[in-house]
Image (spheres, rainbow, N blue to C red):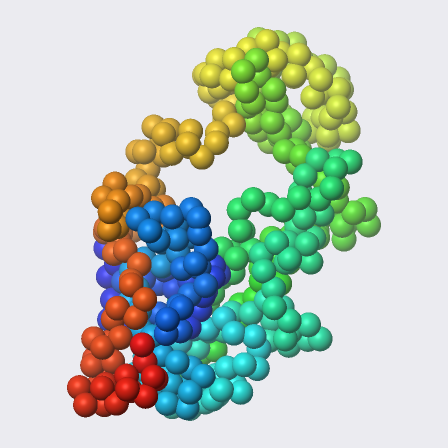
Length: 397
């Protein structure tokens, strides 16, 4: 079972917004006990990212914080810092998304916490990385899409660059951080010692540009915006149908012939302008016009049916509602029930993995702000009397 992989491991999570919470949600989905440390009275910023709401809660917060517990600690007080260090001393994984230098200045940098707990896997997520002239600056997904060039290759030629609608840099950074933590767990099993994991929005954005960087280094020519198309192969883009759009992907000569046959013009595959992929790329505009003349006379569903019968890769252009209603998505189990107060039919996107043919079990809804403070601290050996003292001092919420 997926939720047994990290069972028994404790994660102290100081992250908020998207990248860090996505990372720790993945760890929670794998069965780790994620203790989300939040500011008393306010919590994670995404608790207030609304509308939209589901059951009176931010839909963004709900989407990123399942399978966690919430503890409120005021980290602006010496008592709060001391308490956090106690939690880290008894944890397996500690993760934060503060600006480089901030954790160190407060007394819970990597050196301090791994000194207390040599087995600790310490993960720091930042915008620009831990070193370099911009390392202390904040950063957000669209800002980093601009900085790393992702926006420069997104959109249609002649138009302004546009943001990729999905927060791919935030989500990607969370994925890389989770992968680094898994690597730290494997290494600790061999050595008995933890490790320090660093992930950043900058590194993720540069990594997403891998193919474009290779193209630029090979040719010296800047990659250009191509809408839905791809520079290296054709046809590989959206085509207009009578009632919508269809993406057609022919990554080799054989698939191109199947596209032509499926669209009812087998002779097009023998046109000398389109005989090979390099020729199709060089004659992209003529190819697009020839295929559009065929697709624009057919409905999207008919195009897809024809091409699939011919064995050519294709897809209707779906919106979110159409994707959610699609039979294949329903069969995949990727949309899982997670009832929340007042909305018993609420659903979430599941972990995109199966182990031994099964996905993880039903997720627990995100926690109420500070709802687990007393229970979690008791598990770390903090008795009733001290708990009352901490609450009276305003150290915990």
